Image 1: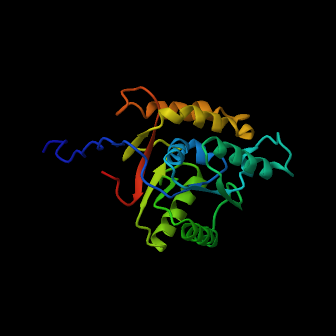
Image 2: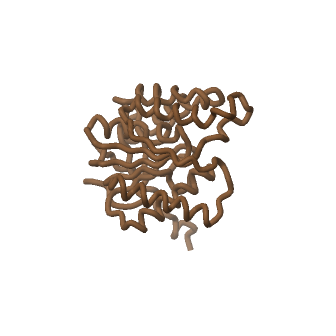
Image 3: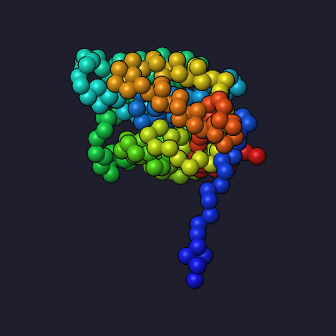
Length: 236
């Protein structure tokens, strides 16, 4: 028998979404800055399209200063202010901070509490589009938030479109969206996170990932963001 008789099929080419899906929009970020690093381009496009956009930031981000370069007493406030300024670059002014501890091992009680917060956020915002970390994000907080939000979507019987975004681990995407027209705004937004770019050139890395995502439909030109479907169906 040929060793290739059960060879799996190659992944399908990601779908090119010519425009962002219709809002309202609710985006979930594990830490202050993930809301820009992941779906920042599409959030800007949603605002340009006139869609209501709200952002939830799950943790306080205190683990983002491993060398103690910043004042501990004001660090959480610094992280929140960076998010507010970064999102303002994209035209987003609706952001909610839950302030959960950063980079902790979560119990079932912690996960259930996170789901309660998520259900409440979904019920308040009534979104048609939800953005959340994709399932195989390598950072534990990203991974946990994916499963928390996914469980909450099931709990409220969400019937819109939920898309997973990438930050720490590149995905095999279901769709890509051209964000070239707003990439400078996204990069400027990333530069607002001074406490983070003091450690890593996140703006450079994220821009590189978005450039790479232009490979399939952009012929290697411009900048694109990639997503996988978590719930719902992509528009035709």
